[in-house]
Image (cartoon, rainbow, N blue to C red; front, side):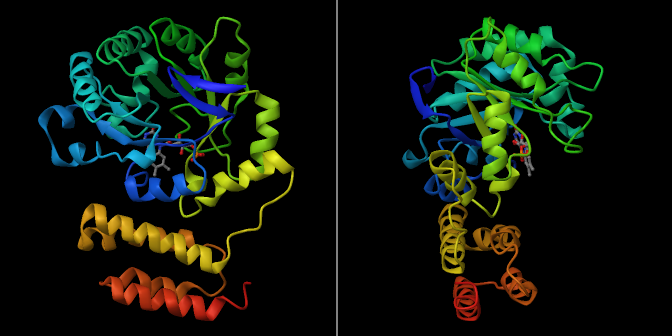
Length: 330
Ligand SMILES: Cc1cc2nc3c(=O)[nH]c(=O)nc-3n(C[C@H](O)[C@H](O)[C@H](O)COP(=O)(O)O)c2cc1C
């Protein structure tokens, strides 16, 4: 059965690209979309930043036609400011708005935003209601199981947020205190999915990193779709590999070295186009080791890639990589 968020039809069992600060920007989203991500989100955007017209926050509103459907994710601690930020973000014409109630990092959670709202569900509900009322777009929420082991309240949260009008909920199977430690636990996510009161799509998130895990957890936890974050960093092929496995029960061949180079180059070019050559080249440096993970004796090339200052130099290094590995890794 096709998954619907408002009027957006996501097809059967969609795979979503997770919002990731400093990662899921337009260049990265481009390569994920090319490789099968069904829906994507921007990095989280501070409501305060949007209202102050901060350049960094504004730049994150940039979305492109080929990215659709795409959601803009915002966070904040002040309901009035979240309402205003929603109005501003709506003008950027995304397909939906998303609220972050999951971010565990101190600068966010300890300032009353992100996951800290899990400690004040009444405020979370009021904030969500304000956001829903401030836009004509569907609103989705991304959150965690709860604040800590003793307060896993996402079951109640799901019902109450649905009641104020959210159109889908993504749950990361960890608490705030877990940060990113331990294994994600999706059992509560399944309980929510089985709650007869819940009508909206429920997406599972946390630790999906292979086609076989995606297939096993799809069966076990009965979610409507999955959101994938870290496993897509430097490996956007994860989406198409999972889809192929779902369809055929077989593994798709891993990307060849030529494909890795090709996608890495596309990412670089998009990065330069969007950020300008200097910043584009600089910010691409964090991605090289991921694109070539598992390639033997890559260290020397990586060192060269992360110190190269021009696109010509980078092209030259990529050509050397191609020459060295094309045959041995074919
Ligand atoms: C580098 C990084 C940045 C992240 N930034 C955000 C963010 O901006 N908004 C958000 O909701 N979650 C953010 N997350 C959490 C991810 O969206 C996701 O919930 C988490 O990584 C678990 O999924 P995974 O195991 O598939 O990576 C971030 C995670 C990482 C690793």
